[in-house]
Length: 259
Ligand code: MF3
Ligand code: CO
Image 1 (cartoon, helix red, strand yellow):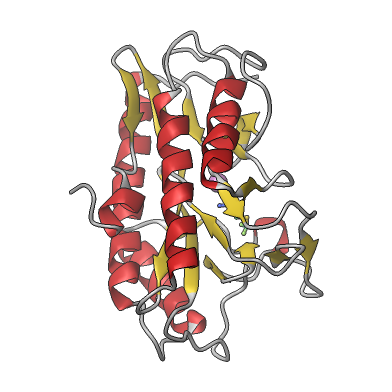
Image 2: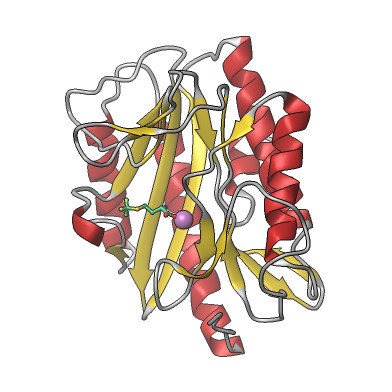
C-alpha cells in the first residue's frame, strides 16, 4: 500500500528534507584528506539533534551509527570509524536520515576527497545523471519501474552497472515505505504514481556487473569486482506540476550545478 500524503504531512516532510539538506551540505564542507569517518558521524548526530530531530539510522535493524560512510569500492552502509582516515582521491558516499514530528527524511550524496581520478569523476557524473533521469520520470500516471528503467538506461549509456541488490523506496511515517524502486528493469511496471506520493530513488552505480558482497561487519556492501561505486538519493514528491525535489537537489548543489 502506497501512502498518499496530505498537504500538512507534505509540509513536515519538506521541512525535514530541508534540514537534512543543510546538514549534508555542512558535512560535505568538512570532508577532506585526514578527516575520519567517525568524526563525520559525530558531527552528523550533533547537527541532527541541534535541529530538534533524531538520527533515523541509529538502531535501525541494529545499525550502529547516525551516518553511512561508504568509501571507494564500498557501495552503501559503510560504518563510520575513527580508524578510517580519508585520503586524497577517495570517493566518499554519505547517506543520512533523520526523524522529526513523526516523519522521516533520507538522502545520500557522493563526494570527492580532494581531487578525484578521471574514472571516479566519470562514475560520479553517471550516477548523478541516473538520478536526474529517475526524477524526470516522476509524473502522475507514470509507473514506478519507469524510474528503474531510466536509471538502468542512463547507467548503461555511461558504461556503468546499476546495483541490483538495493532499491529506492517511498518514505513518510516509516523510513522505508512502498513502493520499492529497483535500479534496473523494463518500463511500464509497478504501481502508478499519484499526487501525494513521496519517493526516494537511490541509484547506486559501479564498474562491474558482479553481485555485491557484504563485509564481515554485517553491513558494508562492496562491489564484487572491487570497482568504485557511487550513490545519490533525493526525496521527491509527486505533484500536479511534476517532481518536487524536497531535498533541493543537494547532490547537484554539492557538485556545483545548482544552488
Ligand atoms: N539510506 C538508507 C536507505 O535508504 C538507509 C540506511 S539503512 C541503515 O535504505 F541501516 F543504515 F539505517
Ligand atoms: Co533511502
